[in-house]
Every structure is written in C-alpha cells, then in structure tokens.
Image 1 (cartoon, rainbow, N blue to C red):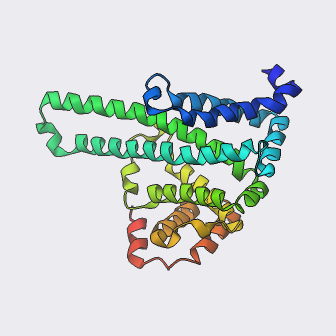
Image 2: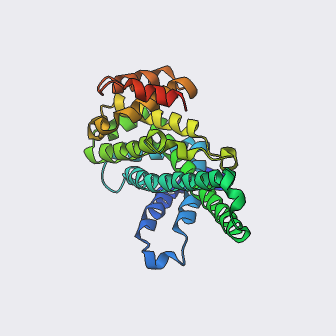
Image 3: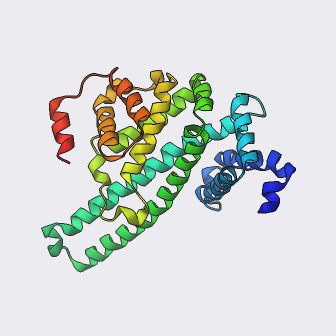
Length: 279
C-alpha cells in the first residue's frame, strides 16, 4: 500500500480512475446485473477511495482540485459526488425500508396472537426475518459508506461545498437527497425504524440525524435550500432540529443554521410537538 501512497503516478491518476469505474458501473444493465453485483463492486471501490483520502494529503489535494474545477475532464470529483448522491437515496431508503419490515415482523412475534400461529408459518416468518436482516446489513453497510464519502466530499470541505451549491443541478440533487432522508427519519413512518437490536446492524438513527443536520447546515449557509420542498414537510424539519438539539449533541453552528432554516417555515403545531416528545 505504501507504493500506492508514495507513487506520484498513483497520486495523480489512481482515485480519478477508481471514481470513473465507480461512476461507470451505473451503465450495467438489469440483464447484466445477475452476473455482476454492482452494489458490492461499488462498496469495494468506495472503501478504497475513502481509505486513500483519509491517509494521504496528496490524494485529498487531488480531490479538492477536481471539485474546484467544476466542469470538464478534471471535474471527476463533481461527477463522483453526483453519483454518490444518486446512490445514496437508493441504498439508504432501501436499508431503512428493510428496517421497517424487520420491525413489523419483530412486533408480530411479540404479539399475543403469535402463540396461535401454526409452527410451519412461524418457521417461514422466522426465515423471512433472517433474510431481511441479512439484506438490511448489506444495504446499511453501503449506506454508511455513502455517508462517509459525502462527509469527506462535502462536510469536511465546506468552502468547496458552498462553491458547488452555486450550481443549480448540484444544489437540486443535494437538496433532494437530504429531503428524502428527512422524510424517512422524521416523517410519519419514523417509528418503523425501531428494530429490536439496532446495534447488530451498526444502525444509529441519532448518528444519521446528526449527519443529515450537518449537511443541511451547509446547505443553509450556502443558500442552497431554494430547491428543497421544505414547506411540504415543515413538521419533519422541526422534528429533525429538535432531535438534533436534544439527542445528538450537534455543534452550535449546526443548530444556528437549523434555526435559520426553521424561521422560514410555518411554526410547529402544539399537537406535533407533544406527539414527538411522547415517542
């Protein structure tokens, strides 16, 4: 690995090449996918990109230069960001959807009526639960990698993010990604995420709320929220800000940005606040 870290050729070309492969995997058609696990391939590439960006300032500098390039062949970082945001919505919603299915089956097994269910149906439901847990582990692992990449690409580079958000297409993509996560975490189906042993999946709703809040704060600071349908889900954003403040120990500047965001939305209704605090 030290050869990769120290080689000037690798420092210039390795991550752009990995990013190109990561992006091009989107060209794999559904008929080809049965012979090629695109999610697993992307996961391995993402792991290597994350590692290289963490351990070498040369690779980090190359990323920063690419993000600043904006357009053209040098802008592989922007293309990578666009692909990561597209993937993020899919893998995160898929993982959270599996958690909802798991929570439903776990509740079914705890109910009094479970004792009357025939044994063969119990086995079938138990097998389904194990399958769903495996799928959830897989997709949540991909989602965690996705969020880690976004943290490196955006949260740790706030000045670059502000520049990128001046591009309407990137601002709209980022806004759509965050809005989808806010709805999943703080919308009407949020209680479906309460699986019995979240730690078994390395799943922490609080961590995800913190990450989403940090990215939203950057969006607010860069005035990039104009593309987000905030008013259609104002209660969700109020809930997110409250959870971030009370349970996630986010930084003061993040809370300030969320407060600025909420100031543009209708006030939270008392019944929404009471229901949220009773959960």
